[in-house]
Structures are given as C-alpha cells and as structure tokens.
Image (cartoon, rainbow, N blue to C red; front, side, top):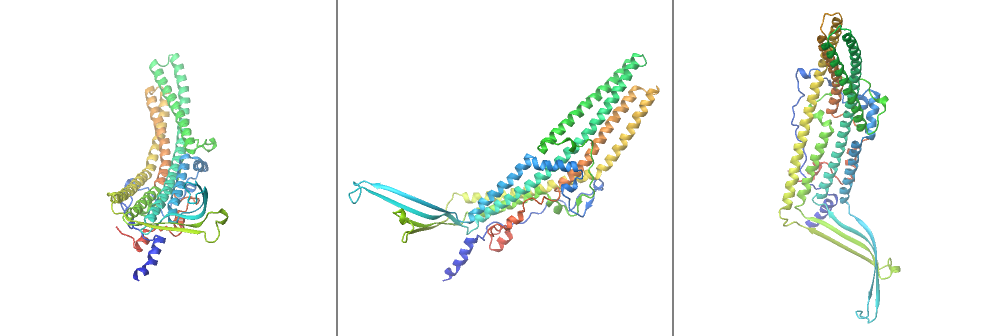
Length: 499
C-alpha cells in the first residue's frame, strides 16, 4: 500500500524532471584586488557615480557615430557573431524538445500474394492489410534529470554565445573608433609633411641659387638637399599611411565610407569621469567576455549532472495506437482498433569504466571553465589598470610634448633668422629643424593617444549599455515551458545531488 502511495510522486518526478544531479552552482571568488591600483600614475583617473553610457552618447562626433552604425550594419565578423547566436538558440530548442514525446502519424498498406502450392485453401490468394496509427517514438522519462541537465547546458551555451556577440560588438566599436582617430592623426601628419616639403623645396631652391652665386659652399648645398630628400620621404610615407588607414577602415566597416564622414585632422574625444563607482569585482562583471566565461562555467557544471545520471536507470516508452483492416473501406469501422505499449528500463551494470570516465571528463571540463573564468577576470583587471594608468598620465605627457613642440618651433625659426644674418651655421638649422619635425610628430601622436586612451578605457570597462534590440535572455530562460529549471538553487532544494 505504501508503494502505491508513492506512485503519484514518482509520476510527477518523471513528467516534470525536477530532480537534478548537477552540483549546486556557486560563483567563484574573483582572484583580483579589492580596489583599483593607487598611486601617482592613477591620480587623474576619475570615478563616476553613473554607469557607462552607450556608444551613441559616448562618441559625440556625428560622423564617427554614423561610421560605427555602418560597421554594425555591414561588418561580416559581427554578422557571423549574430548568426552564431541564432544557431545556438536553435540548438537549444532541439535539446529542449527532448522533454516532450515525439508523436507521428503513419499510414500503410501491405499487399501479398500466396501461390496455391503454399496456400492452405489450395488456391492462389491475395491478401491486403491497411493500418493507420499514431506512434510515440522512444521517449525517455527524465527521472534522474539527465535530459534537463543537457538542456540547461545547451541553454547556458546559448547565453555564452550571446555574450560573445556582445563582446564582439564592443571590440568592433572600439576598433572602428580607434581606426577613425588614427586616420585623422595620419592626415594631420600628412598635412604637416606637405607643409614641410613645400618649405624645404623653397629653401633648397634658394640654397641652390646661393651656391651658384658663390655665396655658400658645396657642403651646405648637400645639407639642404638631404633636408629636402628627408621631407620627400616623410611625405610619401604619410601618403601611404593615410591610404592604408582608409583601406583598413573600409574593410572593418564592410563598405566604402563616404569622404564627408572621414576626419581631416587629429580629433579629440573628451569624456570626464568615466570609471563607474564600485569595487573591481562588481564593475568587471559588466564585461561581456566575463559573462561569457561564467555562462560556459554554468554549462560545464550542468553537464556533470548528465554524467552522473548515466549511472542510474533509463526508463523509455514506446507506444502506438490506431486502426487496422483487410479492406480500406473498413479501416475506421468499429472493432478495428489496435494498440501497443512497450515500456523498458535500462540499468547500467558494466560499461568498462566509460561512465566513470565520462563523469571525470565533465568534472575536469568544469575545473577548466573555472580557471578560464578566473583568468578572464584577471585579464580584465589588468586591462582596466593599464587603461587607468594611461588616463592618469596622458594629460601631463600631452602638455609636456605641446610645450616641447612650441619651443622647438621657436628655436627653428630663430636658427633660420640667425643663419640668414650669417651668425649661425647651416648645421644648426638642420638640427633645429629635425627637432622641430620630431616634436610636431610626437605632438600629433600624443593627441591621437589621448583620444584612443578614452576609447580603450571605455572598451575595457565593458562598453556601456546594451542595445534595446538585443535578445532578452532572462525572458527566454523564464519562458522555457516551465520545464527547464535554470536555477540550480531551486534544483538543490528539490532533492538535487550536491557536490
């Protein structure tokens, strides 16, 4: 009698699959410092009480915003990332379908002839058998949560793929912005190289005329010629850099970017107080690559439940019901009903150690996923710390290089004036010009680095808010026909096996 009272409970467990043998999931402790690095290098890195804005608000230049939107619409790598999300969603739906039995309708007609030599009546006979059935294929009752664990694994793999898409989106946005800024810096260098070339061309023409007039010697003429050749080389190099920047930007965007959307000089991106307030372990969880690593860890944890369930019996059901008749016209008449029901139980007794090896593999995969998750957090912390160090020192570096560029320009102009009055050698003019050109180049590069440092910090912090058009994963998790239970805490409360 007691066993009969347990039948409803067993049936409920079988139909809902509420038992799980996966170990209860606990997020590993973040193996990083409890606070961001401190020191003189980080003094100017400011803290913001608000979360990072999305890229439409962060990048204030309307041209750059249009270029980024073009990239999101046309970049093939991002397109592949979105298709991978769709693929994993369909794969999850395939796995989730195992919760329900597969039922198909079949109809058949069998005709056979028997010669009189084999017939019991001594005459040639022809027989006909018609049938129509609804058949349920081998359906496993998920008594020990094997199917549910596999479904939870597939669900979290889908979530991980979605986070990979977000990570790809953030990376591509940052790459597009940095390449756009690099193009502006290279165009500034090209303009400076053109001005230098024009100046050196005129200077060489005057020097050559002075040499022909006997006012200077051959050494000074060759020194002027070397300055002209150096300017020509720098100009050609700058032309090549600009052309390659445009080609790289077109490839990244996935289409040709109109000229009116391209920068003509070094641009400056300004955004104060970028670092969100909070401890590192909280701030870094906004990064999609860390969320991806955690979802992969949860999936590996769920797979252990499926491996553990392999040690327990599997109950499968095969059933069919329909009608059969020797005459097609009588197929659905009374008295033609036929049915079959074939439950079976499979209990593993000896598998040659395969089940134990499968369990150990799943546990090792979980340990690997833990290490990958911890490494992702450590890498993110290091990237943010480096970006903060750049942000904390770049302004001072930019100001110093700006002062250097101003002083070298004045020194070059003074050397030219003194040379024309005969109180300075041409070699001094050459040296002062090289210092001036070098300082101006450093200034442009520093301006580019200043703009890129903000983009890099923005990227390392997770890239701000997400698109409203993105998939709502939480809604998908909750709407899984109330069969897929994604919370391992709930499963442990219902008798789950704990590690």
